[in-house]
Length: 221
Ligand code: BG6
Ligand code: MG
Image (cartoon, rainbow, N blue to C red):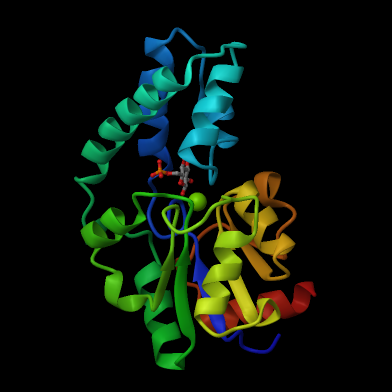
């Protein structure tokens, strides 16, 4: 395929492995509520908003709670989660990502972040990656979170690219759905089992160059 003009990266699970930190905080909350919650249930929470996540957890046990309590639970989980991300450093950036981004910078393409998280800016500060991305669209800037395409449409637009000129990297099924619904090409980062709808699935950025990736995509299309 032609070199995309805009390259949009999801943050959690693509640039840094925060899924486990989210999981630990949700698990602590679910345990405190006596709601059975494990790794498999957690898969469905990847990429979706904090609000949707708590609703999914409560639904596991057919619970309904007053709005005020739901807010308190979300705040509690976010407090634990924020304590855990405060430990992140540039060393936590996933393997192969620094080299991949450096090559993209040399190619002169536009780089952006498209994340559902309202903590994205904190995480980017801890990882010291702010200067790399021209545009950051996160959970504080959208009304509808993934699988709605809003986050990626806003990202592409802010980078001056049409959806057809945009490539998205996503580790969550909800994010792959969002990118495809927005008319973009999507590379899933993870397993075929969870991300089979993506145009291409890679397991890691380690040893991967943008050129090699584009060739792989070419063969798939
Ligand atoms: C996404 C994560 O990036 O952000 C989800 O994959 C998370 O697991 C969502 O629920 C919202 O995050 P936050 O930081 O705003 O609670
Ligand atoms: Mg993600």
